Amino acid sequence: MRPRRQLPWPTKLSRGHLVRATLAVALCAAGCRSHDERGQQNSDEPSPGATRTNGIPPDTVKVATLGAEPRAALGEPPSSSDKIATLSIVHGLGSAPDSTKTTIKLTLRWQSVASGQSRFAVDSAEMATSSAKMSAGERQILKSIPRGFELVRGTVRRSRGLVFATQTAGLPTRPSVPWLIELVTIPIPSGRIGVGGKWTVSQGLSRPDQIGRRVRQYEVSSIAYGVVRVRFTGTDTWRPKHPVAAQATGVHVTAHQEKTAGSLQFSVGHVLASSGDVTIHATSTTRMRAPGQPAVEDSVDMVTRVTIRPAHAAWDAGAAGR
Image 1 (cartoon, rainbow, N blue to C red):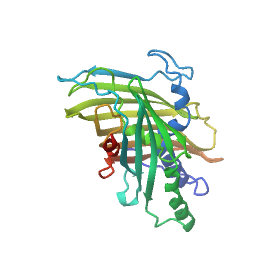
Image 2: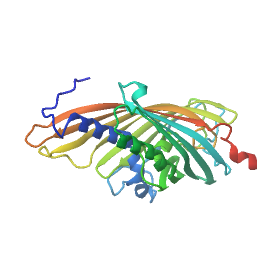
Image 3: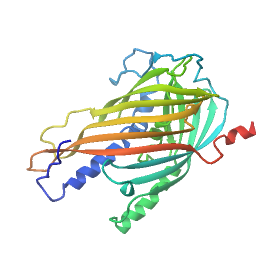
């Protein structure tokens, strides 16, 4: 890993600005897609092989191996039900101890309302971070952040095996709740899949200032009594939509990459995992230039860990009434 360069100016445009900017981008880069162009991008459901008008290739789910017998249709539509899960998120610099990282805990309510369609809401939120170096004003702002998560509502739809989460109420959050949901949901191919079955998902990503691609590989590791466990790895890669002019001043993110790996468990027909763990290693490269100074590039490495678990005995709360 290349050494950090000392910035040639110590005043307003400091390395602190650079780190904060890249941290902010890395935390929500993929998630911001849900608030920007993703809903409009997929609204027309182009046929496989079609080219989108915005230049982003179509989304695909390709099966590489069907797996061993017996096989099952993992995406069979479930009956309507409510689920309550706990999402825990730990985020911070890759080299930093956990005690200095930000921890967010969300209680997520999920309702399957029709074949391929669901609704979600954040019932409660908690947030903690190291506040030793924060001012009183910064600590007050921190306390208000959980309320923003608690206003989030949205919908999830499944189309051609892919899962699309869209926020319909509340302000954007960091990390984005739709982004989190898409981390703990499973894109399920059509047909019957057995243990050892593998498939690859490729999706276009878009933000106002960036364009990217997500590629993930999934493999079924076990199927027992209607419960499926899937391992997956993948990479999200972003680049600016428009090249940054060499003479431009300020902070500009020139590249962003996220490497994702995890294991999720879900019931047949339910795209939301009942439990699982996902780790995202993100690297953002940023170019910064102050007036009259040469441009300087730096990179910041972040780690985000996302865990989903049943909220006590309430995971199948909706089943009790059926």
